[in-house]
Amino acid sequence: MIKHHVTTLVGALLLVVGCAPEAQLQRAPHPQESGTPFPSGWAFSAQSVSPARATGGMVTTTDRVASEVGAEMLRRGGNAVDAAIATFFALAVVNPEAGNIGGGGFLVARMADGSAASLDFREKAPLAATRDMFLDAAGNLSERSVVGHLAAGVPGSVAGMWEAHRRWGSMPWADLLLPAVNLADGIVVHERLARSLRSNESYLRRFPATAAVFLPGGQPPRVGDRWAQPDLAATLRRIARDGHDGFYRGRTAELVAAEMRRGGGIITAQDLAGYRAVWRDPVSFTYRGHRIISMPSPSSGGATLAAILKTLEGYDLRALGWHSPEHVHLWTEAVRRAYADRNAYLADPDFVPQPTTRMISDAYAAERRRTIRTDRATPSSEVAPGLGPSRTEGTETTHFSVVDRAGNAVAITTTINSLYGNAVVVSGAGFLLNNEMDDFAAKPGTANQFGLVQGEANAIQPGKRMLSAMTPTIVLAPDGRVRLVTGTPGGSTIITTVAQVISDVVDWNMDLAAATAAPRLHHQHLPDVLRFERGGLSAGTVARLGALGHRVEERDGFQGDVQSIMVLPDGTLVGAADPRRGGAAVGVAEARRVVQ
Image (tube, rainbow, N blue to C red):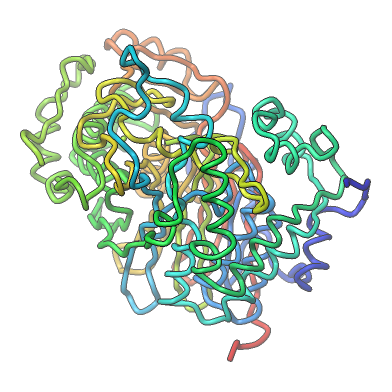
């Protein structure tokens, strides 16, 4: 039952985890935009972002409560991985549209000793999956890849956090889940959560178990209501007690398998018991003297990011002017070509040989630049994949970044694909399942729900991981220190958003506030459209781009929800949450005690 309550959500969290605000932390002064004015019609300025500064650690997420949970682990002496795990599970409670235990994601880390690693906990196709499982009798795609039980891939989130803790965790596993358990026992609904539930009410009514969780009493909770998720709390307690097996075996696995049988899904107890997160070598390349560390396949993020930036590296962008027609033209042409290769070739490396080494090379970038004309746009119909013979996600993803006092840095992007996944809550377990099966090329050559037209490499196969655009990324300065930890949700726009943030910092020397607030663009080869955020390009620039042959559209809404941490040369940490959705960066002055 919902009870009206006036305590704020942050206040409730402070009672739960016993932390207090760091009153002594400085707020970063409002920076200038490095001499780069944004268009007069643009919604944000650097002053729209309120970065936090600290020296003892930083967590930035889309939700202040989750950021506070992670920061509390740092205060208690935990490392960046401990904080990331606690943050991950907190987001599963307070940000249910994207935070999850029923989805998957990717982790990129650069540790204080200089080592780097990436962890793949992407969902997998169930063993009973078939190539044409979402085609109707006429060979057309059905909505079953998006809504309902059949749309779910085998979740990887809990396995990912368990594996990260096994390798790097310093605090007891159960301690890291306790804040999430307590939050699931009851939180006070804030405005953003209430708005999200209200906006998606009809979707949340699709299945009775889902409505019971998110529409208690038949209505979405209102701001100030106390909202409890007792089944989720019980599931989190099992995971806290039993670790990996608390999700993939035993009671939770039984509940998932029963839900699948009840709704016509195909995930079995065998699928769950066999799931493992996988360590992979990160994508690593240089851009104007900076080392970029990002996620390899089955994320398309790292390779496509490299293809974009390495192509742009051959141009003197500063001489063109930020977001000038010439700058935007070259950016679009680089992105167009990178996405052509992304959509054609990238997939699960355990099933399809990947051209990553080629895509991140200087030679590839030079070849692609030779096909770019400065005086006209190249229609996407004329841009074939450029790698020769070779043996594609949803907007409701969430990203967060963590850096600890020692200099360990973690970037995690996680998703259930669409807003509220496939709309199915596991009855008795209290969590939503993903609809990641739609990220496969269910019908190669046909667009998925995000407009991506993908190839044979990403066709459905049993046990295969579907391609993703998630791009958790860490940027090292030329001297080898961490300079930027970043990432964003946004489906197919993730890669272009991350590329723009990096370029704004490296090419234009923007501070973190300006790079976070700056207007964003997107192109993905097909459809052949350059989209920009409302007010993000001047009328003159749009007209000039049209004259060059670009089809340019102003999009409704905003692109991305970037959560970043910048490390200044003196070691000061600056965290910034994207003003497009809110969220918060929470810094730590110093650890209170060391965990034994």
